Image 1: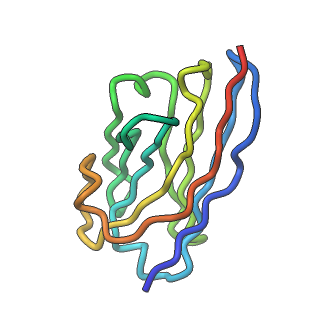
Image 2 (image 1 turned 60 degrees about the vertical axis):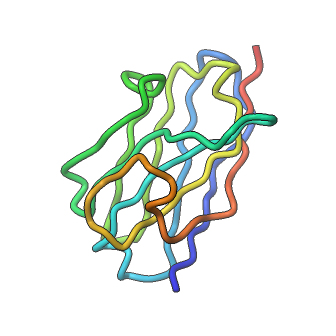
Length: 124
């Protein structure tokens, strides 16, 4: 069983930056693809970014391209999401997820483990 814990969320002004992290409890996550998803109040959970097991392949939702960067440190069992030029519409609960398949995926149903989420709020 892999436990994922997100951290680093908070309140930031529009145009600002924030880096959120996801720490995994087990080293086995090094062999897993991971991803970030988000859910705003009253909306469906949506894909943000995903990264394969080596970190060599990444994919982003259109709204994240050019502003967000996903990365991972397999020695520390941590995944990151660097977010720049944040907008009020980025306000959401951000979840990290891991799947036992090593290939990156933007499909939430393909993930096996989920964290509890970290809140990101962007003020205008």
